[in-house]
Length: 220
Image 1 (cartoon, rainbow, N blue to C red):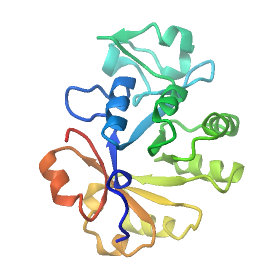
Image 2: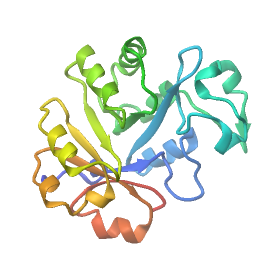
Image 3: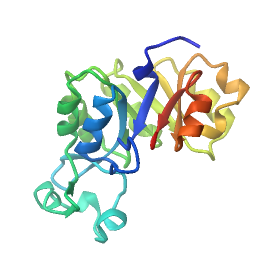
Image 4: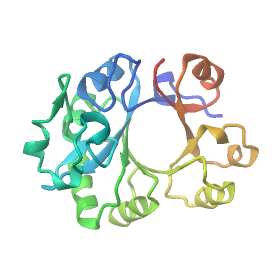
């Protein structure tokens, strides 16, 4: 495997450096960058088309509010807090990255082409951004808008090896984002794509795999 600097190989999942940090919040991302790691974050679009960093489609799990991100304007969304945790804008996260560390942006919903175009504009100038998604249509449509973007396809633990191998043939796809169940799959390991494995959730697991694999981890 190609040798790369340590902080380029491993990405902190949602900025959760350890259990004292909340997912997808500015404090966590700052701590991640301070430790010289890149981060993975999830994005949605609000009703007024602002890109925010949040994993779920609704506010129920984190805030106990039965509303969808896509149905709330950002001005109302930012008033919702939980123990001083406020949902950040993507542009805020990019700003604190200072263009020094990788930012893997996972697009959660299926965005239309106008939203994808706006996303490209918002991230322009941040050369360490990589767009990933389990909804592969997002990635292919991004490439239609700009074929030079850094992109990756995400695969769940239910994905077939056949589908992963087929996707690896696309020369415009830079990364494969894979469930850790595929860590020791020989066929996948032979592909010429850079691979990131998720989610490594303990120090023991991290130490087992970090020397020979790119990892998306938390709670180190």
